Image (cartoon, rainbow, N blue to C red; front, top):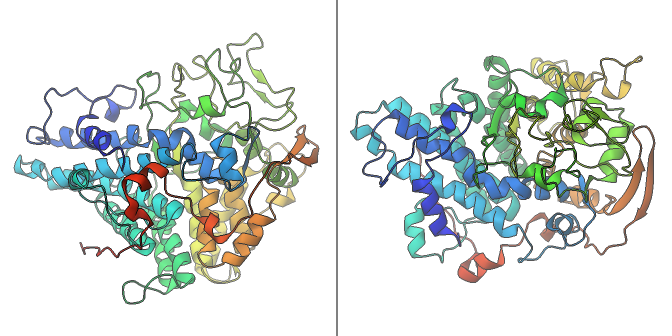
Length: 557
């Protein structure tokens, strides 16, 4: 909230862009005011188009994987001064680099969403179809609800802001209880699931996007309720109610969202040419080929280890690797497609990356540890012009159908120790879970991989591990850890403290060897480390962040 003026400017004037996606092509407006905007359906949809990229920029560039993967120990960073290495070692302070960026970005999403929600009613006065207005409100509430879910998961108690203009006049506000923030996020997502259309142009949110995300939020609430954390006088406290809602939402996506399907080749999911593919329920919409700051995807420049690979584009990711623990897990499971898509390893050949090199392809060599492959799409030639300086053009996956399949299995499992095919729900859960595993199997293997064979019974650990492998480097695993801690904190802290953080390794594609710890200082995982500290600048400007939270009364729709 330190940058509230910037949020206000984004909220009104970020309706200008250029790109390949039709809905990101927005005409510049001179002397733009709320009174002269929202005159037609195009104005309304132009306003919400800005919610798909610029406001998420600082979150996407680093914070998404610094917290979702590095803190969760899917990732190892060899430079101790980098924020991702600090987050991994539980060494952060309120002044750690990127902490402020993550906070500001999420409140930018909220601020712009609020601006739309507080002003789009003007469109009705101009005769715009209420269905269009409600659909745009659905987009804004989807984004706002997701941002609040992240904030509650990362920081716990945070302020719920509905009027950023009023906030600009008084920054000093109390936080609201985490339970209120989670419920608020669900309420937003429920509205989105009600009013978003069944289908829209590629990259736009649909009803199924909201239902899939709602399943994730309901499961979060189920875990929170399972730990006895919801106030019984305010909210539902039975976890099975939330699990049931999560299962219903996910199953609707699986059975009725016929425009969605798993891509046959996992590796192909992560190419610019396949942006907004059949599996994508929500992705951040960066503008391929654009050098305009804020509308491009900087993840590649921050994660890639080779400028040569990118045809001369900058690459600063040489010190970032998948962790020893994660690489060993993938290796022991005999993974191939997810391995090739997630990290580089010696001997791997990519005929669609490095096409501008003399070899016309990229052959990985000289790497003792495994650098990040996911989000690395190649240079300008490799991406048909999509990747340019400091912008890969790749649409960041935020929710894929594969995750919804796994969410459905987790929701059906609920508080039970295991499920099998003796019930209709159990049979469906196994079907969707095994569909994810089937896609991961090597179709050219001489012998079947028993480690990825269909399962006939499912436990939470099966789902936990499958999610880790399927969604690695997509910023998810830390939030799996956090939500499990809501009801099983002792298990989670034991899990975190028995991870081999800071260990190096050697992997040549077929043989994995542990090496010694790098010897850096690290703090033990304690209960307080399940939250991040508020950014120093925010606490300085708003000392009430450190005071006891207050309840927020969520209005009924």
